[in-house]
Length: 177
Length: 239
Image 1 (spheres, rainbow over the protein chains, first blue to last red):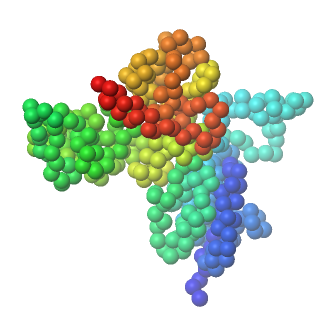
Image 2: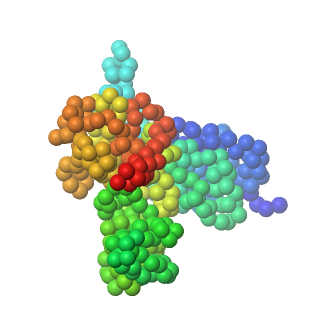
Image 3: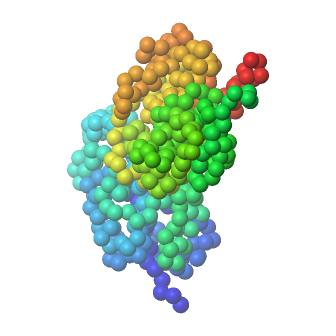
């Protein structure tokens, strides 16, 4: 039997919709499980991002100091890094705050929309960056998988092609939105 | 065709084609089934040459020329899809995406947008340039339509259709380059316009989600692409 590849999946500033689409590959999950060992994911109980990961599906934009640390850690330990979905590829919805001042974003998020609250939390939580960024702003990305979310077919196709040692041809299959 | 029209022969993508002397390269290419991508060009409106997607290489000229504005010449050798052109088209499109806030997933035109489908056509995997994230307004003062500057690519199809087809000239542009903005009347809110006839032609020729019908939500704003060809045809029939 062929040696299994290792697969990690994670989301940073994303909504988990891309992961929902990953689960949407339905019965083909069995095939995915036959090709890949899932070594790190919200779907498995591993706390630390492991070394020597073959493929990582990274969902979400980079929005906090913790995200920056994480994306660098992921890049260092990953052979093929996939920007998984529009937030990872373009910063998408998280970037809609980018043309506002951070101060105004906090006011909107914690004060104006929560009557009676006068606290903006700032201890023991990741520090929000001035802007939300696409993944490739910080690290090299090997595969850009567009879509909000990417279709289950495109996710399966991408994972299957990589397992065969081929570069997935996504330009005619995937699009933004 | 009157007998006084001169015919020119030229080569487009290694194919010999015939053209009437006043035709543009784009028109001739399309007549011959050669596809050149466009964003600002729309049949039935005067050509504008703004979007630069239709650039072509002409043997002997170091410059890339917009095929919608370039008239054919005898013996011209035109290349519409070289690696150099493809690279420039992709770069151009990336600049469009980086210049304003094009968030496809929450746009009313998601799935119907020509900018979105062009990104797919030119195989744009991501935007290499840093995004600018400008702070842009949405004019929702009109009772039927919305103008969202976040999604505008300044192709001026709306300006041209309003002037040339509707004859109202409500829409125009102010400023230039990256500061360019579509305005209504003398840069007054659209809802206060005294010239707008509420015809909606601007909305239906807009390639993106910059002009939409009020109340249309994500992925609901399909444009009536047959409107302009139909109007043009009916007017020609009356002439």
